[in-house]
Image 1: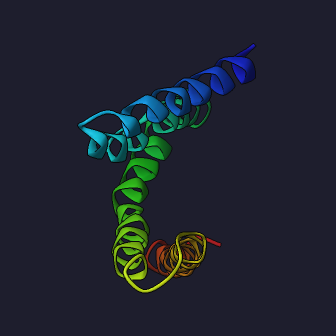
Image 2: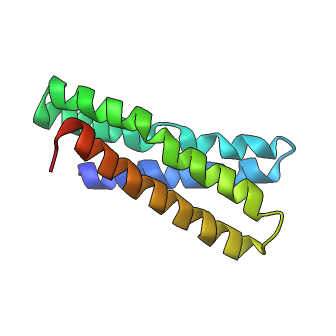
Image 3: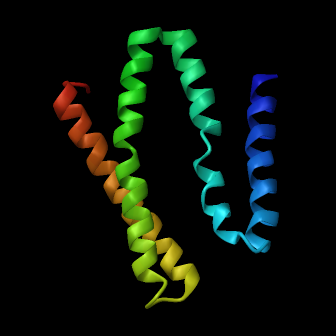
Length: 114
C-alpha cells in the first residue's frame, strides 16, 4: 500500500507540472519538482526505520545534495544556448551524475562511511 501511495504522489507532481508549464507563470513549473515529495517519504522511512541520528545524517546529506542539482541547472542553462534540447538535457544529466558521484565519494571520506 505504501508503494502505491508513493507512486500516486509522484504521479500527482508530474500531472501538476504539465499545466503549470503551459500557463503565463510557466517558470513556476521549475519550482514544483523541488517540492519535497520524495524527501518527505525518504525522511519518514529513515526516521521510522533507522532512528533520529540516521535521519539527521540523511538531512545533512540532503543539504549537500543541492550541489549536484545546482550543477545540473547551471550546465543546462549553458547548454540550451548552444545545443538542441535533447542533447542539452542529456548533457546536463551527465553533469549531475558526475557531481553526485563526486559528492558521494567526498561524503564517504568526510564521514568515514564505506
